[in-house]
Image 1 (spheres, one colour):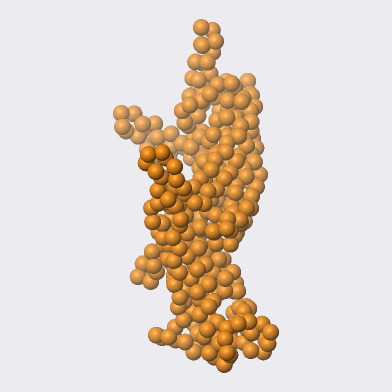
Image 2: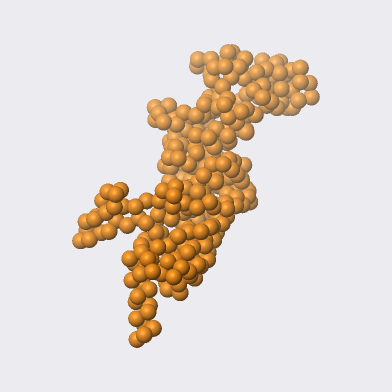
Length: 333
């Protein structure tokens, strides 16, 4: 018999190292030949879209397109430490460091333009498509490219930025404190179909809402949500190491099953924007939290369908049939 059920999972997640641990990101911004801007920082790309979003933040500050920004982040001899690609911290921490460094670069470009344009001060200067322009007399302008030709070698225009996340260590006596900041929130609803004869669980549809602060790149965010859902689907229904006496029995992908495109469903992703005042343009990271509510939602949906609470993952057909049998025995007993 096939039965359907709906389940909901919700979560909140504190980003960064937390608990008062120093959480520092640094960045260097350099004016490159042809008026390009180089961002040098240790933001590691692990599939979360750092190569794109960090350049977007820099481009926004400096009035450029993403194509005008070069990101150098895989050569430790050239870049400062920006911390690990962990704890969903890079968008918030390193994004803030890049924003600070680019704001410092903006001020430096204003000052160098003031000198070259023979102005009294930097008042009224703005950045406009790769040029520094005197807003109320736009005939007075100079391009980034021209400045890069003037300031070369030891005089190359360069600025730095640093950001330290604000967290406090929890009080060991009472457990009080502010161990993380910021927090991100999400909720997921899933409908499943459970075959009580075979123990197979099929996902039918899902709606997934994720708080992102502000969406720097909505496409990347939806990709992250889809990826987190897929990982959690495997965690909930498929991936089983089958440890026996400390040995992995499912030690190859022919036995250790992971979700494929055929296992995934179309997800109704909802991006919730509530800008975080301390974040770069309000953006929060969502790297890890997108996985957290999915498995609880699936388990709740299974419970709603069959009235039996599964407490061991993954919910393989064998485990589900066993749980149904045990529940039936209790009824009879």
